Image (tube, rainbow, N blue to C red):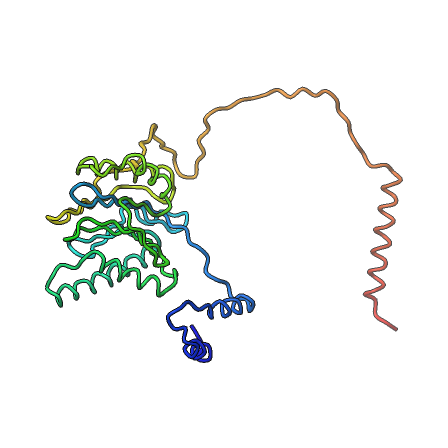
Length: 300
């Protein structure tokens, strides 16, 4: 936050519409006083969005992690903003959930006030303003897709508030693997089945190359006729089956093999203490005991 002196100096200089770097000095002072800036957090998610010839397809995995622990195997990462606008979230689950809930409520109010369909650009603007206001401290990386009167849209919104308007997007920890599949297979003339298959392959690539992504694949198909949210559409990583039955009783150890080996004695040596060292040790122990008795004897 700017202090009063810095704010007044900026306003008096007539530079209200330009960039100012007053907070840079504040940040340097905080670091000098021992304040630790928040570190970057690694997200464990693979989310994808593409545009096909009739609309938009969004995809996401369903694994939620707490560090190295899988906390939820069937987490929903595709959130509804409007009936024609949906959003995939990567990052902190609480941040993405709260961001989409607040934005959805504001869009509902706007639709009631104007009595018309909310454009996709309005949802994008609300999300970007909130994220930019908190300067990246809200850990929410979003892939938003929707279809309005202007056509299909895919917006890749970063936690700092920046935006990418591209025909296909991927975010999360499985971005590199998913984006490689999208760059190889996306075409402007994809139909519905080809687009769904491409999204499945991109999410599967992210799941197989990232430990933070896994479980199932959710899809959301948005067209001018509405949205179809396909929950648990594909199983990306199936659980393996046991190849054998393990019936071991508690407090027991399974012995799988026993081998007995003969020991051949090549040479034997016996070491015994010498008589001189024995006498020296006994004399030292007598001396120590006599000194202890003198210390405990009463003074006369």
